[in-house]
Image (cartoon, rainbow, N blue to C red; front, side, top):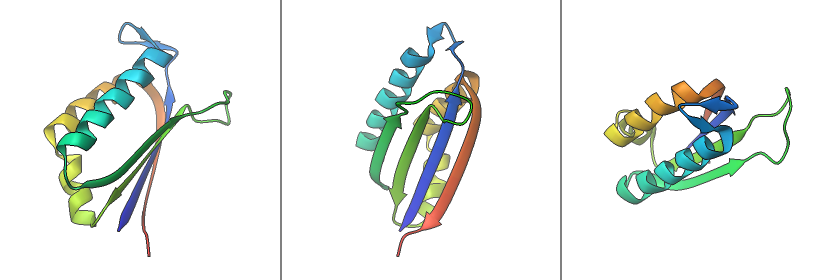
Length: 101
């Protein structure tokens, strides 16, 4: 199994919305993707309870059966659209992918 973790730092205001509204939209869309995309086994999204230079604003954790399934997710149209939105509202991103034994 593959664990896919993404951390985001968000702009305070972008695309006509506050940081909190944009995070809410991201979480809603990810929830819809979870319902639609059967290769996504588990999804967990969390907003940080702390702020500051050393903290990320949110974290996304996903699990896939294989790296191939993760790659299929990357090109899934609804994910591609959400990714395009995220690029506009974030200031930074970090990703970790690893195998779960």
